[in-house]
Image 1 (cartoon, helix red, strand yellow):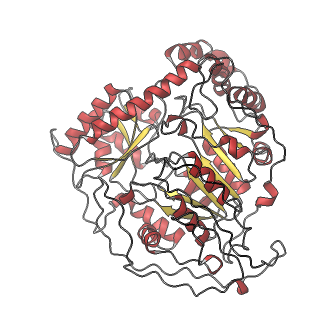
Image 2 (image 1 turned 90 degrees about the horizontal axis):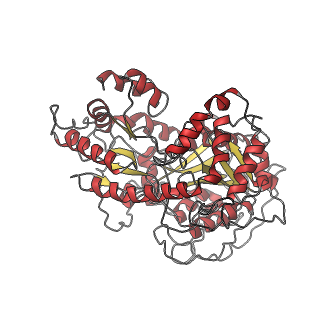
Image 3 (image 1 turned 180 degrees about the horizontal axis):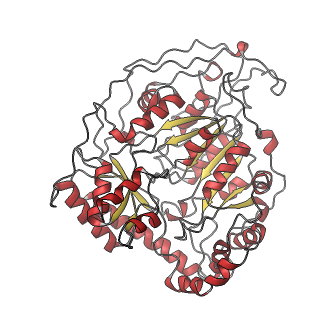
Length: 574
């Protein structure tokens, strides 16, 4: 490909130019795509031929209403239609979740899918970013995340499972316990867009549990799983009140005719779909092994259809990306613009072995100098562990969280100052889920975070440690005492209550632990501290679901002998 093609990366608002743009600027043939994470084995060639034969009718006529298409999807998923809302891609649903249900603040681990950080900031919400640590392989510790949420007083929590871009996975029992511990929040979102590629658990989805809870939404993808990103469709599952609230705001024809045609084809192609997921999981293992053999390249464990890799020391991600594209016609996702990541990281989509061999050959030539242009150039000497590609990103975190990525990481390890209403959360034995402290108890003054606080060392990981970065000490979180908070009519005067004992939450790494009993959480302790602009939206009490909801059993997909169950795993007889 010509060198000027790489200029498209600097002229697009997205992380990468579209395949159509790359094709137009080249000789008419696009690159091998290791950037966009979708299923390479589905639809089958026969399904594409069927769609091609119907192309004239598909693009000529209006589609059916979204209700008709949703009803057909629900008949396959064995889900009640009143609990489902379909959107023109997951980003449309994220947008409406933000506008309708995020009142003032949202917490999300980073790095993650960019719309979970960017969308609420665009509408003036406070985004509390919980940094995943490279030293622990970017694993999400739910107990620490819960403590972070209580310390910040956040009203909405998001979990992506598996997480994008690192593929980190949380077992179902841990996610369910987290949902129950956060029952007093306005909303908990579990983004399962990549869950059907996971094989660490037979039935990892929490869609059935979400329908019975008053403040939980599960987000699912169709374009990624079915290999059809160009057809913008996805869906959410929640109790009827929440799902109906989002569904009522969607346009009448927000789903196109291609989406309708594919949904109505699915019941005839369940066996092929299940086989495609199985093949992606096999390819993921093979691809991880091949990439791990490259000197200095770190490959993180993943349950998605992608792998998160750290480049060897001295390699700059933008240079590697551009040279792979121009010299080898390979498109990769460089992660320098992801909050919590840097240009030292790439996200590589799982593809068939023939494509992976081409990728490995290209990386060998670019990284180790076996091509005419030599090895990849070293990073610029910025004096930090972050490449130049993340300078703007770190400034953004500084503006939203007060201390930047480095300050957040230090606070997460050293003990972030807690607001007065939650300065001493009760923690169950063995590091269990913290319970919010009862309001009205005497609280100590917030203490500043020390510049060099000791923190326990994690278990050895095959991950090189990043270079420590000198940073100014983050300012302590200053929150008025409870008696200083104005008490609006919507919030009754809090009554001091002892925090009930809580069973421990198994850490994310303890996947084999038995599911603990649901945790009881006391009511919310009061309003969010002043200074946070409240937004029009719904409280937890306003989004309660109906009682007596009768769930359809997730016993299989009708009309096919081998469709996966509603969670996308397991096999069921028709």
